Image 1 (cartoon, one colour):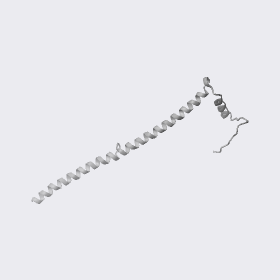
Image 2: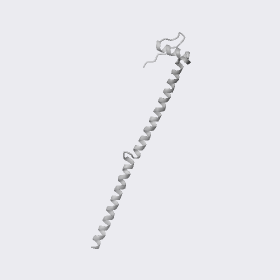
Image 3: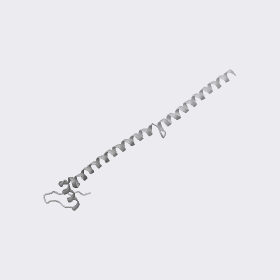
Image 4: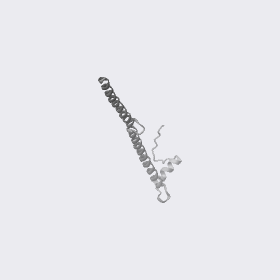
Length: 104
């Protein structure tokens, strides 16, 4: 009888330990792999960084286009820019220009 009581007491301790380890494992797994876990956090940080880089590139392109448009504005007309745009639109070249044809 004494041995049976000892086995029951140790069995409860073992079951309680296994249950505790399972609960800790469950929360640890979801802390890493869950919807709001560490992997999701790092993936979102990477997406945020890529979006910022794309935003900066688009901002740079927009500023370059704004500078070109400003050069074509009537109050600050740049004759070289006007000549370049006219040649592009009219498909015309000056007799002293060299033309290099590129195939696509």
